[in-house]
Image 1 (tube, helix red, strand yellow):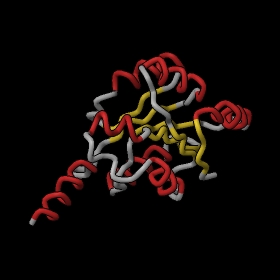
Image 2 (cartoon, one colour):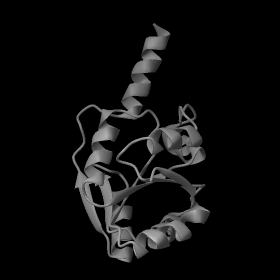
Image 3 (spheres, rainbow, N blue to C red):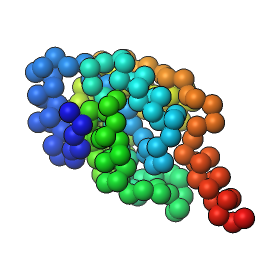
Image 4 (cartoon, rainbow, N blue to C red):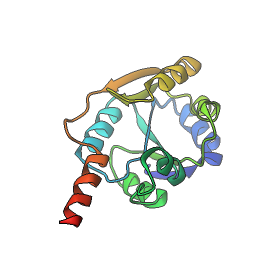
Length: 162
């Protein structure tokens, strides 16, 4: 499938998938500098269902949570990279999500069977709440040690100052 959609197109796309009785797995994040941890996470998420929908954070949200030097790649470019992976079926471009209710409303539209998260996810409590709202199951996936975009960005910044 490998499709990039906006939040306004989600209902039409999701209705088709539910009509086909697809088991949907939702993951979310920045996916700024794609690394082995992302690949492992997405492969494991894909093994949990029929298709994976990545809720891809917008640039302003990432800047607000990770600092003004992030994201390194704009949302459109991150979406294109993700959409080329076999383990990703749909990349849903998030706009600015104003509050938890905005995320909850979107997840309720998608009605996933599974919400995948990594162990240590700082937003796990939100994902648990969304799972309760939608009847989904939250499954945590073990992280690969030392795989983090923030760590990679820090290392690159250090190398550029040498």
